[in-house]
Length: 233
Picture 1 (spheres, rainbow, N blue to C red):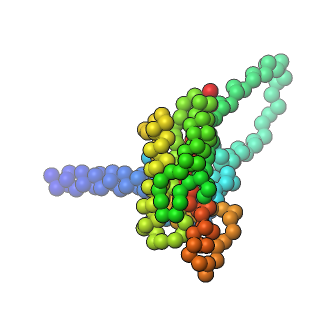
Picture 2: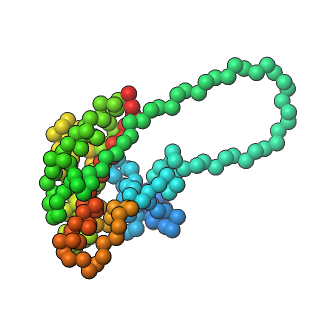
Picture 3: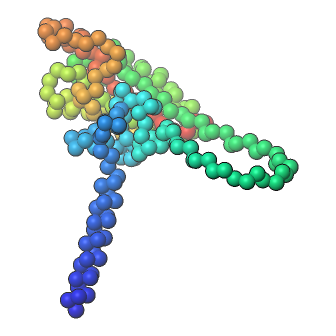
């Protein structure tokens, strides 16, 4: 009886170990070779509720990894093996490959002049007009909308915790407006990046600027990025 119990316990233990290993394999830990993806405090790549990896503003297709963007990763060509020359036969008529599926992927950014004033999460009229034109107006070209990702950003003034909450409020404000315009809330996700991803290609603001000048200088960082993914008609 004791031998049977020990065998059962060993079997259960091995099963738990396998399950734990499988669960851990789903996390993508940041390494020197993984760049361009947002990570959490553990150094693990952040995923959306749909399992998609969150990209940073510096992401390029060259940074794609197979766990996040398998379609963009160049597959290794199989090694060629020498084979005997086949018997010549009449070649079959070439078959045309099926046309590639058209995508309805696009993005829109609410910049400093169109989005939020300092320390605010209320959409301006200019921001609403741009959302109508560059997001709502383009949805008609999609056969379906699979995902709408909305990422809010802040400038560097204030604590990390405060800016994180503010960026989430800004993303939520955009989501609320789009849902009110008919966008399906079930495919809409929001994310706050806080002050961790300053806008690229803008002049650096000196630390000794007067506060008013500093707020004006950091305006490009107060933005929201909307990304839409789905098949085209």
